[in-house]
Amino acid sequence: MARLAETFVMIGYPNDANRVRQRYFALLRTKIAPLIADLRERRYIGWFSFLVHDRRSGRIPVPEGDSRLYIHLRLERLRRVSFERLRASLPDFCEHTRPMRAKVDRSLGTADASALTVPEIATGWMLFGSSSQWVLQFVCAHRDTQPIPKDNICQFFHYIENQLMMRTTGCQVICA
Image 1: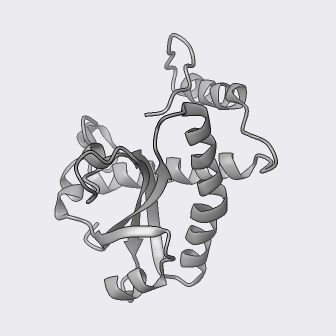
Image 2: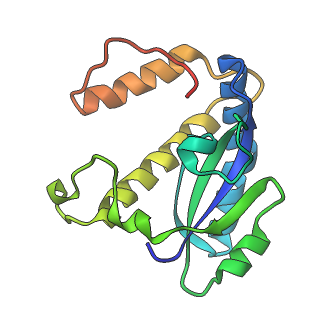
């Protein structure tokens, strides 16, 4: 976890939940998935993950009052790749690229790493990366000529909940 970099891809203002969600999915399909594939093909990165954040929740270096949402993309540089080389390989839509702070290897939020078979924070981050890979696959498996139906999001989330024997009170698709 010592070779992590982070970058941010602007989604937009969270004014219209459905439009911003579809923009997010379009960015995942047309920008993030090809970027990850390229960086892996060039053997620049191993693990990756992403979340959606705004200025406050993701410590994005934008001015106070900026409410835009960003894809917060984390990338593990492979040993032979310098931070400078990785940053130079990123397209212009990747903003505020910087090395990750060391804190990431000490926290999984409220998850208890000691419950894992390999009780290390890195194991939890590896699982989180797998979920990011799944989300990219899910989005890219849908046609780009129409919005991803809310029912598809809810049904596939239901499958994951079922596999984990977790139930919510219903699927409410909103923007963060």
